[in-house]
Image (cartoon, rainbow, N blue to C red; front, top):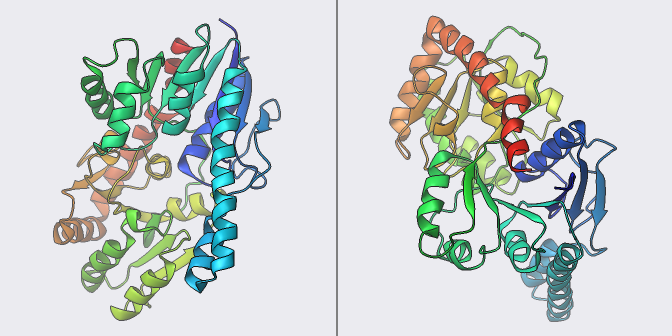
Length: 376
């Protein structure tokens, strides 16, 4: 088998999928593989460090225009709606055709697809002698279209890599009677081990993520409205930016929490890790997740976690009662009570903090990379 690895990408800006692509590309070139990222859009310098030995090939010169199209619709400008609509169709057509062409032209090695749309193209156009590996970086949520693709449009995929054992077992069941070729595997995300400065833990709860409805920051504010009454000396710091910023600020004002909640906006990696390292607790209130890097980073920073036990994600990382707590989804009062208990019990925080650091070792590069090498 050729040691050439191709990894598909939509873009290389900020995001969990993009972080995963960067990490695995860097790790594989270290192991002597020749790695090329096939990227649909060139939206600027990659957000994450990529080894100079990794080749990046941008497949189109076009850029998505979702914001421009939305603006035209909002302004009810018919000419601009037509103009941006036609351009959008061109972008989408080129995005698909350029990736299909790139896959068709690969004669050997391994192609690792990182999105469902790419996996469908890989199954359809990937050469027989090419090792074809698909990934799913999020919860399928039993979406009918996704399941239909798994069953009918992955028949030429050799390996299907899922982030958790639950997802692997579910997809294996979905494929029965439809696809006997594809082997489902569980390989979680990994991180490079870092030297984390051992900062004094402050009276601070930290949360990190896109300010998007799926991340549930609105319910974190509701939870904090309860917790802050019991723990007035503590602060909540939310790191991230996004479309929900205005509504979250509005909720903070409405609940009179301006003195105890801070929205920092986007911070770079070093600043984010510093904030997590000095925080007493990490809070996650997402409605859904895949395999969140940020939870592994919190463990690396010796910061115990409180998270909703949504279908996929947190339970694959957190051991309830040992390095954090898993709260039944939507139980905001129970979440607030557990957060208050953790805040008030310094000895408990210290115990979970030590366990968190140990747990983080399970998700470091060398251990997880062995699983990738097996299928390459």
